[in-house]
Length: 140
Length: 116
Image (cartoon, rainbow over all chains, first blue to last red; front, side):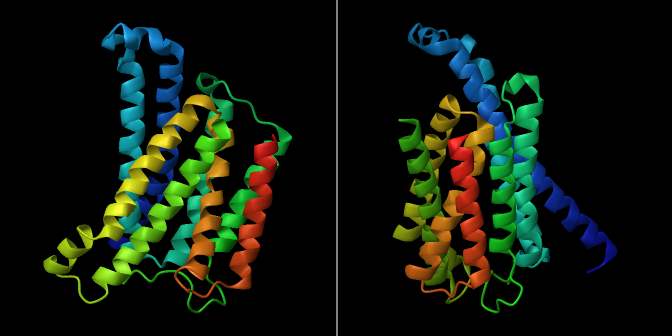
């Protein structure tokens, strides 16, 4: 792998992780907006009130789809066992952003934090292929 | 209701993964020309996968409408346990002890987050 393609693959990997987290956060913001305006505006066909909700949800979904495309670029260059465990980072990103940014109004609890860390450790174990000849998908 | 939506979302998204794999194996293993891709895309497996992913994502938005994302997103990882079990029992793949160990960690983590 040349320096250039490695740079592209690393950028794609970082993009995939960040876009995947951003997708979840965007969808959540959209649903928060929808929750805030309630059903009344929708019933009155006051679509202007639904613009923020629709925009955030659309951005979130677009970000999610973009993360899948970036992921395909990653898979074309890295073995799955190397790249996939790093996707566990998106759990950390979503958790930290959702509990730190006041706009989400969520708070970290010790139980939830510990549970999330166990999930990340589990994702890493499930997705690494050491001593597992048949595991994982090869890129080609 | 929250739990039901969450379970539906997890199951649908996991089923989408398994169907994609089935479709890819059945229709793209023989070759990857345009003809094979068209056959794969029009197969019941890939059609079912797209339907599962669309429905699963819709259910997921309904989950996010009702629940903290810091709670719902870690729980979504339970889907990887379903995919692992399906790989073993439906697709007949070998699953190492290391992976089952990872699935156990995910299960405990999900239980803790769900209880939080």
